[in-house]
Image 1 (cartoon, rainbow, N blue to C red):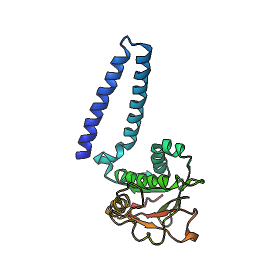
Image 2: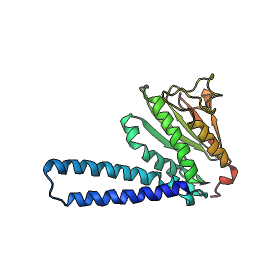
Image 3: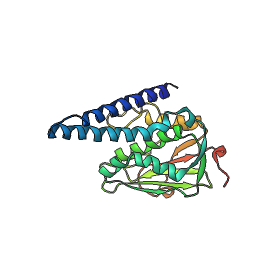
Image 4: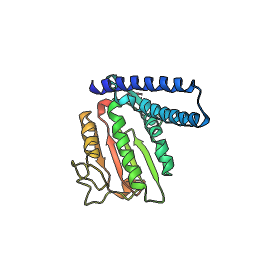
Length: 218
């Protein structure tokens, strides 16, 4: 409810800014003033787009589970990261099965996948070959997110979900802890895959196993 109130207030502020930009554009401006108004408008449009992409996380009606095409869900989240992925020259392969559907709460799954993508981007910045791979096994009711980063050492593997454990500069060590708790609140599980033969890339590989009740009969 608190998030929805903030979201409502943010939408009102967005409307006020949009109206203000429209009014300024109608004024008799110099060329340099027109230039800066266009810069402000472009920035505002970018913020508005990001906000609309994040909005499923704010809405209480998205707390309930609904039928979701998992491949399309991943594509939607990747679209949010498109600028960062392009700037970092990261290739993304979405090999989730086309006909894989689950009953999911988008407000829960969006931040989970977003956190994992954010981590992958960070850890691949010093690598030459930068790849994020999504794949699935509908028989096992699982999806996998893996990358070509440096991976997670066996020494750290049993600590990564602990609160405040981080190897990331400036990190708080809460991201994966929250990811695990959010998934478990929905009866899902997340596991770090360590065995190289079970991975397609050399970096980190996370397996998310969904609750059997999330299955959708085709």
